[in-house]
Image (cartoon, rainbow over all chains, first blue to last red; front, side, top):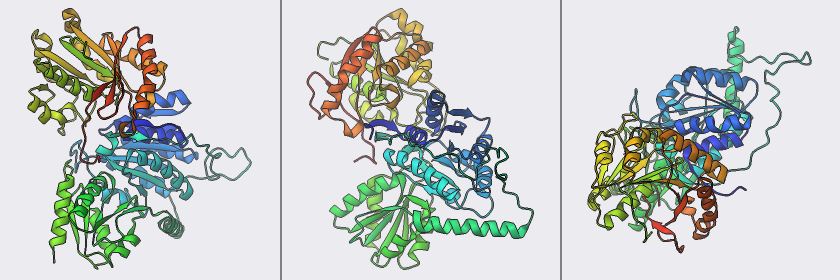
Length: 352
Length: 219
């Protein structure tokens, strides 16, 4: 293992991507994720990689499609408004079964919104950003160390299941600095068997395409793809539980708000309120099973988010009506304090 | 730092995340404790978050003036600076602490004041270095970024401040072990190593203790 260094979340993503074998970064600057592009611009030329500042977010995601078609590890990164622009390209990646990493360091919306942090792209990203029947693996780090680790995991999962994966964090996570231990550079296997790398007249053509002239064939492909998604749901759902063993109240929160909630839980425990937390690490697939299990013991759930209430819908689906689910939120770039979350927990505990 | 005589203007420059903002804040407080009239100017045109303005309340309580872009910590994504900065540069009575943005891109903003600062010739320009930052881990890397900064702002450094730390994982040994590296950086740039800093609470003889700003999500 290498020694610990001090990194911004955005830098950790960039360096972890390089160490995961990514040699192609195609992006377009936007606050608060610009450090990813800046870091790649400095590092890629020194290691024989490619850094391209494309003419737009749309161009960047389509360049990712091109690199991914050759079986290489490609990535792009942006923040909320830029992700909206990339949606068409993400749908095409999914339709052509191409692996790639898309990083979204969220800021407040809708529209141009603002540059302060938010989690308001939850709906957009967990439902499959783009048109058509598809899913996207969505990973939600909660520390700079996890930003590095999950970047590496995102590439591995994307290639294992031949689908795009997203690292979803907020501006604060992208900008904050913490100690991180980076993994040693990974050796990547030779090009994937499906990649379009030239037949040399030795094998049939590998065709990368999302257009199907025959509707029956398209239906078949979609069903096969969803069988693969079912495997991802079964094998790759990840979450962390914190003080849930005896919890009468359960917070569900991810990313930066999970850290704030953890501090609030310590306060609530001191005040004698038995509260715990489920922290989803994968937002798709969503950890419904542990939430459903806790719904039998918990009196109520609290979804803590920095948006107007988006993940709360998945929590309610998981709880299956067995317990009330309330929301604790700030929006527009604001972040709740541990005290605000503590107050929401107290309110939950008072409820009959 | 007991024998340290501050110049009228003190500039903190360096690589992204080397600790310039926090050192500028601590340095301004030290000047204030010496009974000086102090203004801190945030010239960072790069960072959208975690700026001097986060400490506005503490600065006001200490009687330290703050010059900052009116768009700092807002949703306006504009690399702008306050016109008040000129008043601080032109003043001959108050002490100024200038927090410059990271790397050569951040240092560009200082260039517009360089001629005036050089003409007055009562300044220190400190190059802040942290060995735990991935792009300045070797002496060569740190020196290379230092050279880029100096050409961008058209000013030379007068000293190196060793702010080596790995956040909450910092130990006194880690800081002690970084001193030789920092000395080599200073030697390569032909300036002196002004001091080594250490997080308050860690014991390291000869190092200057600094306070850290904590945010809501930090324990």
